[in-house]
Amino acid sequence: MNNLTSTKFGTFIYYIINTFADGVHRIASSFPRAFLYLLLALLAPVSQITSFPRNLLLTLLPYYIFLDVFLALMLVFLFSDLRRISTLYSFSTIGFYNTNGACPWLVHRSTSDGVTTYIFQCRGLPLDCWNERKKDLESAFDCHILSINYADGSDNLFEVKIFPARGALPTKISAPQFSPDDFVVKLGVSFAGEYCINFNSLPHMLIAGATGGGKTILCRWIIYQLVNKDALVYLIDQKGYVDYRDLREDCRCLDTDEKILDGLQSVVDDISRRMELCRVANISKISDYNQLPNIEQQPPIFVVVDEANCLLDPTGKGKAEKDFISQVVQHLLTITRLGRAAHVHLICICQRSDVNSIPGALKANIEIRITSHCADKESSMTILGTGDAANLPKIPGRFLSSDGTEFQAYNFSCPPGKNL
Image (cartoon, rainbow, N blue to C red; front, side, top):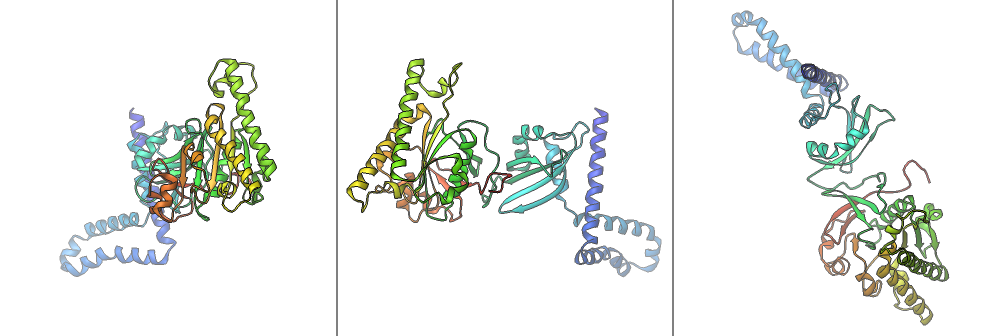
């Protein structure tokens, strides 16, 4: 115990010395800082010379020299990054240090779009330890942690991305690693931390918002997570997959009336087939069936409908087109009514969500609803059942969900580490 205590004291002295060295470096590397430092350092001796009689000054000269040198040294700390000491204190409050008693040392700090990135250096604290103490770290730093990873490929450097527990949400957040849980999909960050949805409990989703609100980026991020969880994704997009070109190989793409009807019919047939498997096995849902030995696994199925208002709105359409829309709606209704137990899910994306664009019976079966800023309270009421989305900031990627959660969606352009 005594050795550990002395080691902690020793590392604290080490951090003090490094903070001092940082101040010296900052002063030496900037002429304005150097000038200001010399000006402040000379205040004490100049005031002594002008304020005290010469005989008294000569008598107390050794003490004045000591005091002036001490004050000059202390002034160096004013020019250093004192956050190093504050982070040391934060770590010490939760006992976060290695076996030698050394807390992580702040190497670099930067802020962009409301997200602060810290680079810490520490030996003997593996990444698993950081993640296990994530809640404690959030409490100590009064923040929400977005991610903790190794920095620059070093086992001793750690990159921690955070945003304050109180204040404004970040406006641009890079997409993290997806959740390992089968049905948990990460959407973004809220004032309470990372915001996720679980399709196992809330199987169907509606994303609404005007052009430029960020719904396509959010939908791409959701699809990327789903295909990486080995889900079977049917993507309905009549615009030629302009926004999903890099994800087409991972989805079953339906872009013509014939393909859409055949694909939806195939999904409906799959629901019936899965329910029959459950009936024969005397169980109620396909997730329980997947736990049985020596059976073929049944992956979750997601039907993603982009620009659903264009697909489902019968306004101005001829009889043949209305018949097609009616068949599509019936298939989607079957999916929303019976899909939960079969792990078949529907995600609709639309610019608006009025009666004509999304049939009321279909919308009533969709539990998860989110929207970007709405032009008026009536539009917000139509989507969420409240007028709150009219007060939502007009920030790309900012959404409000039907459970009242405001969140900033992750900014996803292509799979991490790949240049598509």
